[in-house]
Amino acid sequence: MNIFAIFLVLTTLITAGIVSPNERNIKISISPQETEQNAKTEYVSDRIASALEGTKHSVSEKIEEDVKGIFDKVAGKSHEASEKVKKCVGIIVDKVNGKAKNVSDTADTLKGDVEGNATEDVDLIENAVIEDAHRLKVEGKRSYQKIRRFFSHMSAYIFSSNTFRSFMGMIHLLGFALSYGVCFWVTFISSKVLAKALPKQQFSVVQSKIYPVYFKTLSYGVATAFLGHYLSQSCPYYASRGETIQGLIFLAIFSMTMFNSFYLEPQASKLMRERMKLEKEEGKDEFDIEPSTRNVDAVRNQTGTKTGKTTSDEPLETQQELSEGAKRERPQVKILSQMLKKLNLMSSFLNVLTLIGLTSHLLHRCQLVHSSG
Image (cartoon, rainbow, N blue to C red; front, side, top):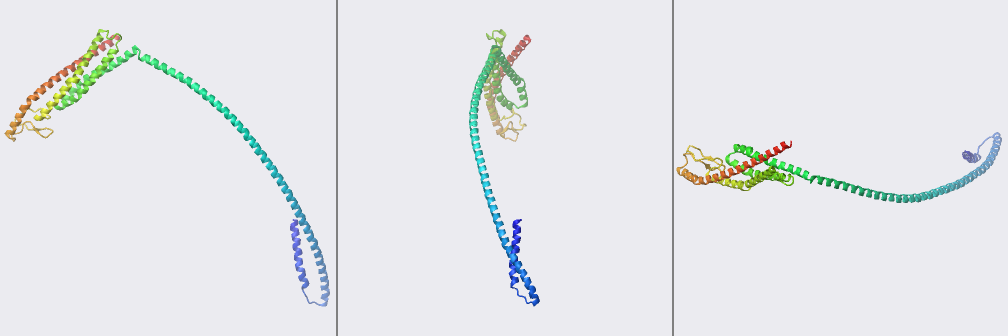
């Protein structure tokens, strides 16, 4: 507010100083009466100007003093402010340095604590690992001992005489069931159904494929049954007469099965193939066609050749050639058929004896079950 007041006064003085000289330089023509009045007025104006000049100098001096005082005050305050700022900055720097020192001390303390804690943790971990390893070792020994005792008991139970005889008795029953089932099926069911459903040559081919598998399966089953029957006996083996007879029956059945499998069946298959070859050459492919009358039509086989007697349209010489060829080949076919028939009868007889022997063992087992009950 003081500065604003001084500014207004200075503005007024400057304006008066500018206007007053211009008024003195103005020349006005007036009358004598007016001259006196103007002289008075000029005198008053001169007094006012003198007063204003004095006032101007006093005001200027006052303003200069005030401005100088203000500048001194501002300088003093700025100096005080700078001193205060320096003091504040010093205080802040001291505080920062103190805090930095505290932080450093704290960091050193924490570092020492962390190192100490880490050392303690490592020691604890090492101790825990050692304890766990010792515990696992002890538990491993206990588990090993438990497993060893378990397998020891299991082996003692499995390989004990009673358990072993029971197990071999089960093996004996499995082998006997397989042998009896296969023999019964092939003898009474499979052969009958195939003989009715298939032509003669196709039936022979199917039988030649079935019988090798049949005899091998039967021999495996009989051998397993005999082994189980022998080892299921209490020492000394075959002390009982009845069990000894059953063992001999198994040996006889096994011998007949092996004879069928390795001699009779291969010979029968060989003769069957030779007879089928001769029948094809003679003209019999799928049917046994005997020489017939001239009214029977010719039958074509799978190769397209005609078989049997032709009609009267064929030349007489061709008919005579076919008849002579059939007469030459028919004795060989008959010989092969007779030999094959003998082999089949022998094989069937041995197969029936096998079935009878297995049935007798079945009756023996039934008697044992009934007597034990």
